[in-house]
Length: 64
Image 1 (cartoon, rainbow, N blue to C red):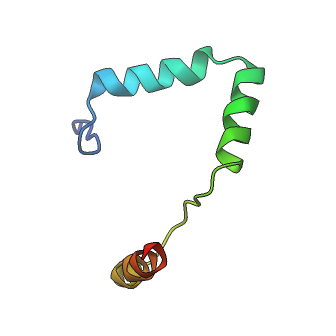
Image 2 (cartoon, rainbow, N blue to C red; image 1 turned 30 degrees about the vertical axis):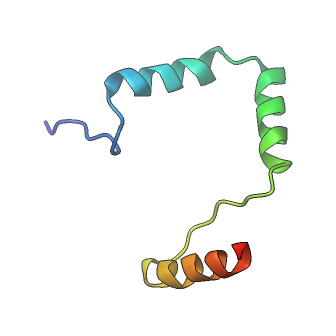
């Protein structure tokens, strides 16, 4: 059996805290969290690896 691998900066303790947060959340709290994300001025999206540098440059130009 292989050992679990965590993202950089994560460990089993952090993973358990995140899981506990979502498992203990009420439906109302979950909806409020989702709505807060929608109201944000940022978007998360998948970008092909070969386009990341181009997107970073576009963001830098936009911020100037």
